[in-house]
Length: 223
Ligand SMILES: Nc1ncnc2c1ncn2[C@@H]1O[C@H](COP(=O)(O)OP(=O)(O)O)[C@@H](O)[C@H]1O
Ligand SMILES: Nc1ccn([C@H]2C[C@H](O)[C@@H](COP(=O)(O)OP(=O)(O)O)O2)c(=O)n1
Image 1 (spheres, rainbow, N blue to C red):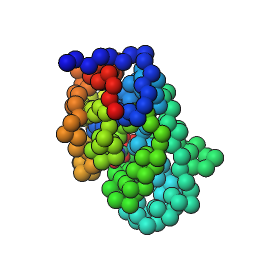
Image 2 (tube, rainbow, N blue to C red):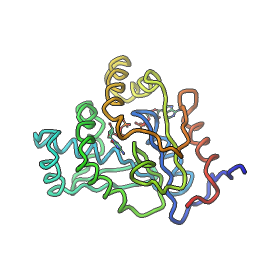
Image 3 (cartoon, rainbow, N blue to C red):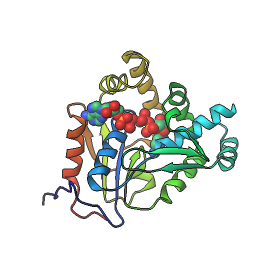
Image 4 (tube, rainbow, N blue to C red):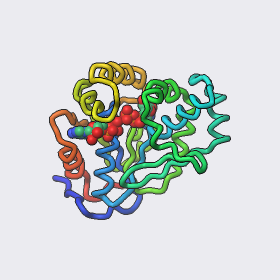
C-alpha cells in the first residue's frame, strides 16, 4: 500500500524520522525541510561532534585524548537547540553555531567522532531530547534511534557534493572534493546505512525533490 504524504500536517506522538548520509549529501537542509513540513524540530547530531572538536581545538587538547575531552565537556556543558528552521549550539551563554563549519573543525572532527567515549556522550544528549523530531547524522538509524519509524540515507558523488559545498566554503571544488573523500573514509565505521533505510541519491534531484521524496515515502503513522 502506498504511504500517504504528510505535507502540512502536524506529526505528533513518539515518532522519529532519521536522515543519515555521507558528508555534504544534504542531510541538514533536507532534515530541516522535512521537519518544517511535519511541524516538528530537527536534530543535527554532527553539531555536537563539531562543538566538541572546536572546544578541544581552543583548549589546545589533543583530539585523540578521550579522557581530556570528556573532562572538558563536563566542565563546559553543550546545549543543542533543536529548531525546525535551524539548529543552534551553545556552550553556556556562548553561541558556537557560526564557528562550527570552519575548515579546521572539518579537518579535526573525524578524530573526535572516532572516540567511543565521545560517541556515548553525544548519544546520551540525543536520546534525552523530547520526541517527535527528525534526526540527521551518520548513525541515527543504526545506533542512536534503531526504533525510528522511518529511515533514510542520502548519497551523492563526491564531485556533486563538493560543487554544492563550494558555495559555502572559501576553498575550490577539487580541494573540497579531496577533503570530503578523506572525511568519508575516516567516518566510514559509523556511516553505514541502516538495513531498513531507504537510500536516496540526491545527485539528480533538487533540494525540494529530495524533501518531497522523503515526505511521500513516510508512512501515514509511523511510531
Ligand atoms: N538536491 C539536493 N539535495 C540536498 N542538498 C542540496 C541539493 N542541492 C543542493 N544542495 C545543497 O547542498 C549543500 C550541502 O547541504 P547540507 O544540508 O549542508 O549537507 P550535510 O548536512 O549533509 O552536510 C547545501 O547548500 C544544500 O542547500
Ligand atoms: N551521528 C554522527 C554525526 C556526525 N558524525 C561525525 C562525522 C562528521 O565528519 C562530523 C560532522 O558531521 P556533520 O553531519 O556536521 O558533517 P557534514 O555536514 O556531513 O559534513 O561528525 C558522526 O560520526 N556521527
